[in-house]
Length: 548
Length: 44
Image 1 (tube, each protein chain N blue to C red):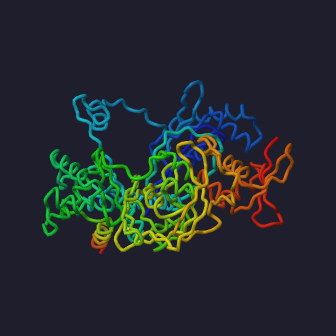
Image 2 (image 1 turned 60 degrees about the vertical axis):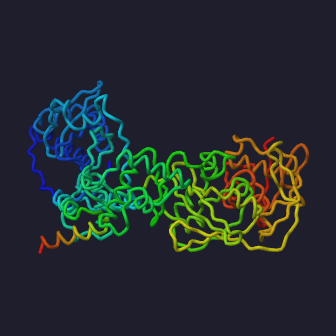
Image 3 (image 1 turned 180 degrees about the vertical axis):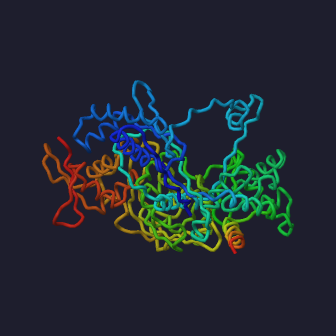
């Protein structure tokens, strides 16, 4: 609930015209700084105010208004002050109708913030990351929107002039909790607790920091050694039981488990890689999961086209997802974090969580392996890595796969339809010579024919080099190269023009980088790329005419 | 400039008192429910 502020009655001095002008300027400035603290300075350049008044009232020009304004402000020095900064004259006031008070010189040498900012040189470096539950930031936005909506508007002229004010975050204190719903209250509680230094939080749980047991250096070392010995990220439950020796039936088991999560999240050597319901911890030195053929950051860049669609997906909203494997995915052993797969995959537990480690089980090959889910971050898209051996041994590009969520958090099955052996000449990358070649391949999985890269379909791929990284970064350049590789030349040798079907372009462009059919269509339709076009009469027929 | 909702000092004190009392991890949901109950009791 918002506290209603009493209306201010300010008496202005000077001639009637000066009084009116002063009241008008005060209304403008108060409106501009309406969300500021009562005593926070609101500053506006006198010239900007004069120009604004000249636009509204043309009985004077800007110079005339500036002179009148200066007189009115000087006549009301109990309300305004005039300040000169870098040759610019500012009118300053506050929402309470007094000139801003000069900032007092305070000896900050012994204040807590200063001591934190400038620790003594002997102080040991403390790495403290505050693990924040994911749900909160979204709620913050909602709260901010509600707060703005509930702020009482003040009737006054809106100033178009630029405002130079010392920003002070505006806060509205909730007094009556019955006015807000459970979701909003939970978001408020979490946001509040996250700012309290005396409170320790992990995911959506909280305790007073002084009550959370600490991990000794010896325990930290033993935890790290145990994870390394087991060779994979381990759940908090196992670490508490085996390394800290606290049984599940012990009265302080939950406290010790919480403490382990809180304390490990403050250590540089450990990384949280868990999912809701299974909190896993990894440590430096564990074998990397996923391909070494391409850097993780580069794969993330390749998948940036999927950022938007993945954001729209609701994690864990679906049980099963189907996918057709592309050449790029098969070669690198990755899968995209797109809208379809994101809907079966777990959400981040912590807002800044980079990676979750999942287990995948193949009932057909009786193998279980670790997979790293890299969440989208910044301008990098998300993806799953670690399928290298499974794809290489059991599948070909074009294979249909099904991923199913199990009842165990973070555990998935991956299936494909087994068929009798098929022999085809399929596209491969000869890594030694860095050339595409077609190799006779026998496979036993059902495939989607339009994603199968056979020699009959794309003979011109043979002997070609993979595109360089600079070209691969740009989807339009990859599309152009793909047209030349798989399209039909329908122009002349002087003015070539390529025609290709969307299906062929999708299959072949995905040899180099992730390219969805929607992305290819967007490029072809975009006026930014006039070299591409779509046939208005025939469905999914595209053209490319290289610039001369 | 951003505007944000905040709990009052009184609410913050109630949250801290709850955490101090139970000495075990509480979920956000539990704390929000306890805070609402405390506010209702005070109002009633």
